[in-house]
Amino acid sequence: MGQGPVRLLEAGLEAYLADAGHRTRVFTVGLEPEPLRNEIQTMLALAERIRERCSQAAADGRVPVVMAGSCYAALGAVAALESVGTEPPGVAWFDSHADFNTPDTTLSGFLDGMSLATLAGRCWGQLTSGLGGFTPVEESAILLLGFRDVDPLERVLLEASDITALSPQEVRVGLDGPASALADRAKQLYLHLDLDVLDPSEGRVNPYQAPDGLTVADTRSAIRALAEAVPIRAVAITAYEPSVDTDGRAACAAFGLLGTAIESMQENR
Image (cartoon, rainbow, N blue to C red):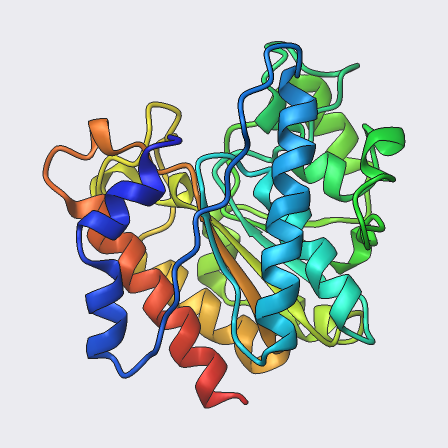
């Protein structure tokens, strides 16, 4: 999945956005190799680089669009919005997984499966306190959208939280109520698009994609509803693994969803 951002750019994402009238600047965020740096230290170091770049973009009046393999990129984007904005951001998290495990609930130890929990302050608090500008997002300001693949203890934690979690079927019913409630709690929005929120029939995104997901049309409709309620200030596209996208349909879906997000920002500016 770490190859996903490069492959999307190679597939013509900049040209796609230019054809729609958008001006883009592309920056690569990376780290120098350090043999003794472990996975979570790497994640936090990358999040800090992302925060720096997104803060500069937002301060310049541009929209930060983060493309990453890992959902932990969200930490940097949210920290940036917190550092340049006067209002704490809300979060719309599209994902087939809840990403709400902690070290005490996870069955696999997969770090990405703790990313939303980390964003909400449920774990790794001592480590994330060193990320400039970051404070945990209030759970009542988080919408989890399209989830359907959850570990048993993770589900217990999620159901006891203040997060509004909607299955694909509930998303299709409409977001008027949840979006309105979110608008009462947040005046700016971080939009997180883990592409495996999509049903496999829309294109193969990664090996972890679960069945019975959202269609591209479902997701685009949901993005528009959210943007009407709360201004989108940053977007992330994550978890695209090009090796499984043998027909290119998942890449096309990513282009379309990003285009919808940007169009929605303009329409509701």
